[in-house]
Picture 1 (cartoon, helix red, strand yellow):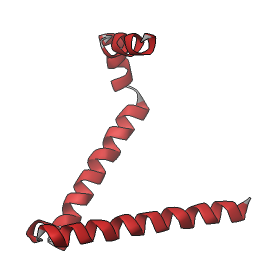
Picture 2 (picture 1 turned 45 degrees about the horizontal axis):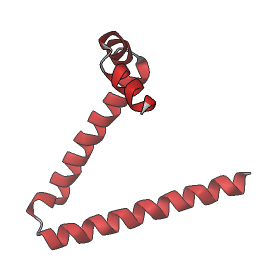
Picture 3 (picture 1 turned 30 degrees about the vertical axis):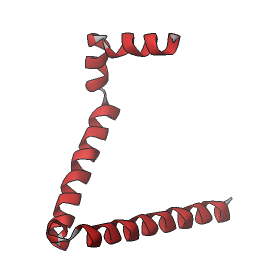
Picture 4 (picture 1 turned 120 degrees about the horizontal axis):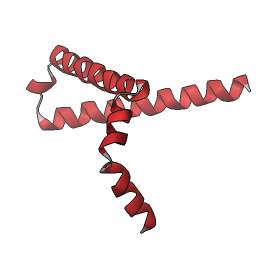
Length: 83
């Protein structure tokens, strides 16, 4: 309850929001999100995902998820080996 009130206060504090928006980490995060959005849009256009059937799109997304999980596991293994 107290946390909710605190979060509501912080979210409605216009000066705090303005200062956060002008901070480097927030600006950089916004730049990265926009960059990723444009990359994903170009990749979708390249792979013609907008012309895919829903079943084919599901298969593509499943393969993508699997590849991402494998890469994450690979990075975890590399980190463990370095320690």
